[in-house]
Length: 104
Image (tube, rainbow, N blue to C red; front, top):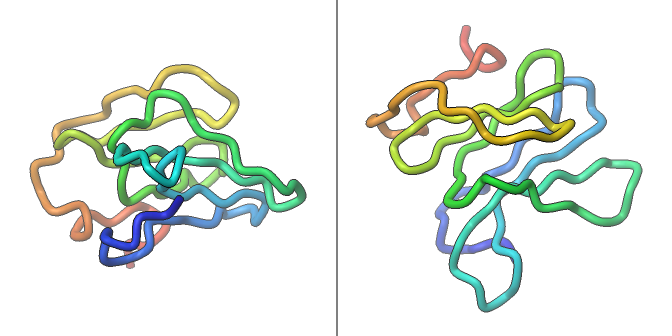
């Protein structure tokens, strides 16, 4: 269930156009937000383990990993599996962060 209180949509289309990643809760009554991965040729989105509290997801240029913010940190996770890795502290507003895909 996508939380309408987020104020803006938290999703990103992969550069190769094959996947969508988005922030949602696992059930309509759950308050915790997680990342979900949707292959655009499939009907079901899959929750990505280890992404509790995720917001503002973005893709690596090769579409193999996702960056996201949680707990005042910037994380990276491979879509093929494995744990999220903390890249750095991110005590700034995540909306002001520019990924390589959006930096001009």
